[in-house]
Length: 192
Image 1 (cartoon, helix red, strand yellow):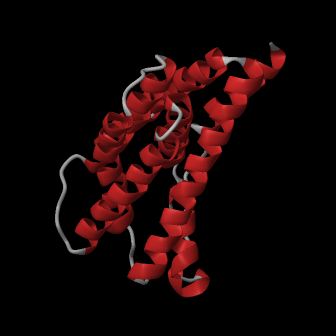
Image 2 (image 1 turned 90 degrees about the vertical axis):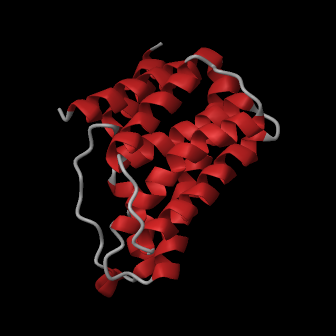
């Protein structure tokens, strides 16, 4: 029980990490600026790990299709921002993604792989747009490859946690992680 409480506390702590300045592409390179971008935002970390948790919970083809849809649609949002196309409600939708995907995990909401792809794809568009809007002087390709790699890594972390929780601690642990994620999203939305 203590171990499970520690895991839940660690996930909640991840939602309370302070924001760091993004890396300067001139100093660190475009790839590293892109790679670290999602890692410096608790909202991005929570949503992307939650996508992996939900994919692990859905299983089978969803294990790779749902995270793949997130990364692919995120790139569309990124390209839209890089092209100067506006997208309303970017930050609120990113915060909504943390809460909604966290709740999907918490409720063990089972859907088909295409439905899961559609749900995460909607939110991924906004995550990608945010990355593109903050690209600054970074090179388009290096920056995009960097944040796509970091996103895939966060999805894999969520999948790994989801599979480990399901194997060793029971499915309820994954659901508890979803509750913590949704609560962290509400906390971030409240601006506390």
